[in-house]
Image 1 (cartoon, rainbow over the protein chains, first blue to last red):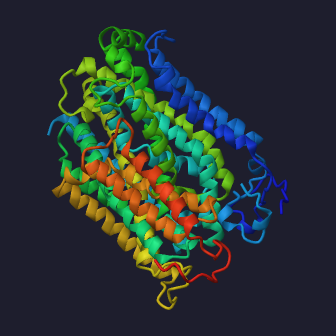
Image 2 (cartoon, chains in turn purple, brown):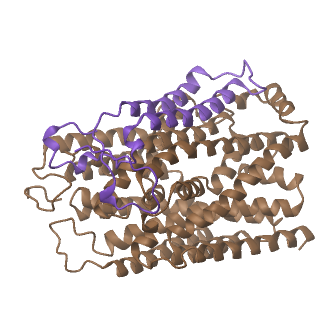
Image 3 (cartoon, each protein chain N blue to C red):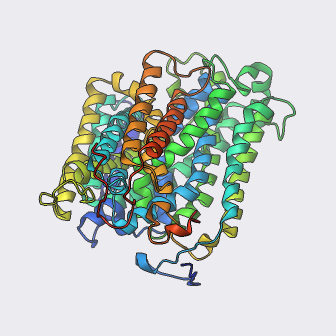
Length: 106
Length: 499
């Protein structure tokens, strides 16, 4: 089922059927939880004024830092994501019918 | 009318005219069909997706409300930056999934998707109703936000109600003609103005009122330390539990907001959306500026009655009228762009799923009275106009009642997460499970809110309701599994699960 094509440049909308499908594990996607964990930890781990960083109270500095780190993490995920590399459609389990017996979607 | 007011009013009038022209012209030479109007023929690349998403995510209330919360509570406002970024992280997976499902089956709204996924028009209609109830107040909030901005930027010369009518006319003018593409183009204008003015304010305001940001921060630490950590200054218990639960709920829910999803549908490929998750979080850095200005207002205008005016109180005191007017235009467009996508989303929800006879996925319905694309587009446009009109009427005649509902938008739309998202990722979810989960979740959410138990022990009532919603959905779906398979063919083998 997986036939990653290595099309690179394209102009205008691509016909849906021509988009590649990727059916390999995408473990990097777990890292999408990194921004979630970093932000949710803020009131527990960073809830203080000192030490101040560049004049900013620590809590504010922590939020600024996480806000800068998060897109970098997501960028790193994209680089390691086989679906991103070939602009593949997202595997949608609800659409898995014929090959559902293989049972390994997502 | 004072000289400043004349200048500001003139600039505002010109800007609104430019907005309409830009929005209307954006559709020139394009196809006139439903797919072009509702989803820009799925032809937007990464740049336009970024502009559109930035344009509709950062509303007038993101700026006014951010400064206002910062002034009133302090640290709890950081939840906004947190959930918007978390939402984009979630969207890296969710946005291409929604896009893929909708594009594969030619669907144009979350209700359209739900109807197709569960082969059930009632589920689709239920989604429309819930979405509408929680979005109309949100549109009204935009109209009123616009009123506040325009009134402040014109030094009181432009009446709140006049501003409300103007926002309605401008937004409807280009959205009815150009659809989603119009919003994307106006977003471009808006984003340029917003980024420009916010960066300018970041430099200018601290220098004008303080000797730079360093001195301001020193004064905050020395005089207002309560504002700098959770739970903030008399914030009504917005501590760690509230923060975490609200960030989780809103972060997931924003990915299925009908207007966000309308933006997804415009993308020309999945990677336009994945890239957006890499690029759009940078925009969050801009939100620290209104936070800072809101906190500065603590020193500049210490006794402000309406904290939402904190931003403009600081600005109008510090800057000449043409600059104030341009900032006001940025603020006005920050109301108009999201509003236009909201009414578009409501239009497509009703136009196809409710009025247009659905998408034909439900085998229990005859397909004879289904509307064709041209008629669906016309119906959508009518609803698109009516929804805006309803919100306008609300803001003119019931300015307070409905807006109270808008604080429930995330909690209410959050209850659609299982139907829209879980259904895509979990094949065994059934129609009965979907409906039961939504019913129980919405009832709990409204119950907690109505009885004053939201937040419950500091935890967002919406998240509690969503957890129960998911549990019920899973329990009902596994107890009465359907024989039929979701997706694929339209034939239905099970008959024992009439809704």
